[in-house]
Image (cartoon, rainbow, N blue to C red):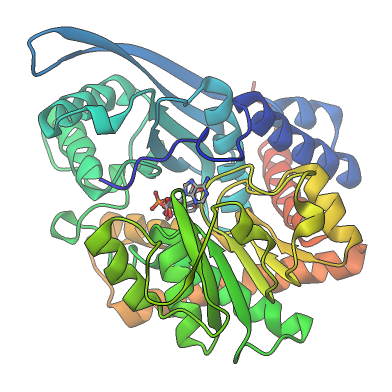
Length: 428
Ligand code: NAD
């Protein structure tokens, strides 16, 4: 299991309503600018389908507990729903709604033929044994099986869920139907038709957009100073791949604290230290830094790759980077966006910056559907091509309309979805 993350951990957090209103406000702004018709605006400011399930799980003690889970499909105009499954004690309906909406935009801005969805179960996986986790997952999969499927909605891992959980969902779904359906989830292990390149895909995508954005901003990648918040799947691979590009990783922090060293931190060594001691602090001769102070260190590029709600009106004026690349979903709120823009700091938004994962998930689904698997070079090259094309597209809109990269990404995404809806027409 991945490290359990608490959204209330440490110094910064946002409420579920806060996250949802950020998502709604971003959409409204784009819809207003695009002059989207009122009917389409109403449709897109609601989820299409929201399934809430309360289901029993037999615990190891023999007691039965009731858990609550969600699967929300924000919009399916462009294709089946796509989005992760999160296990978290603070998960709420509104939080899941926001995450589902962001998936619609993320798939649209990268041009992959999916709608947006998200799901999860309110639970603390750290308190569950492996057998309880399997029973919970299988029952949840069974409950949501009425809305998921390779042509309907394709879940994937998110916070506190992983390839093993995807295997159990795939197996449960297949048992219901009586035959193997690999394309019902992505992020599966290779042994059951997962894809090569998924594990580092999001971090690789972050590296690619960072490289493109740095070139555009005139920041030479060689020696560029980078600070990373979060050293999980996204943060670790982003840092490692950027280091390979010649960048200097000057600081890294996770939820417990982090390390800062102006001359640079070797990410492989830091990973080994984290594996050995379960923490980043204490690594070699680096200074200790708090999870929030990492956001304020002098650097060229800041990569928030932990959780949402990290940069807001209280600390945006203290960010000392020239470029912020959002590895995490929703790390910057609207007020912070405005402050950063005023200070001339470019933000590469989440729906573009962290889309590498969903792009390679899409490749996994394509490979599953055609039962033919590609090699790693083909996967990485295809992903890079989609990332660069999406980046250039958003950059052009940003320049043409004199708006931020976030606003431009939203304009591209919302326009694509609303055009699709217009073409399809309103049923009946
Ligand atoms: P993860 O669980 O592997 O790692 C999260 C990291 O963030 C851990 O190092 C954790 O300690 C750290 N963290 C948590 N709270 C923190 C805090 N308050 N301050 C500093 N560090 C903190 O998760 P991940 O898969 O790397 O995902 C990170 C973010 O990226 C999430 O927002 C997720 O939704 C988003 N994302 C992930 C993927 C993916 O493919 N994994 C794809 C797109 C977006």
